[in-house]
Image (cartoon, rainbow, N blue to C red; front, side, top):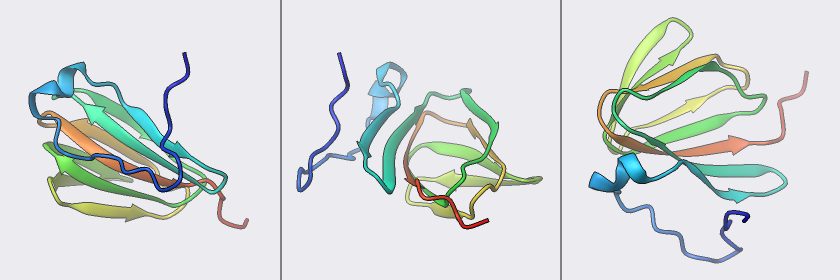
Length: 112
């Protein structure tokens, strides 16, 4: 069964998940031609290993706390924090606390 993606003009709740984080999967909210928006859910201790994307991204921490590594620089994102990355910026995440994040990916890669 395919997961539901939000339709144009459909309201999507991004309220904190709280204690439901461990049982909630990461899921795409929309995937359009130019844009993908994903709610990333990371229980404490979970990580996303070093990776990169061809297009720009933004990440907003909705709740919890994550260590966000860009290149060799570690930063902490907490609820309400937001970060932008240029295309192909190597990055990794480690959930310090149960966390959920709003990830926006530009699917059109930067010109070479």
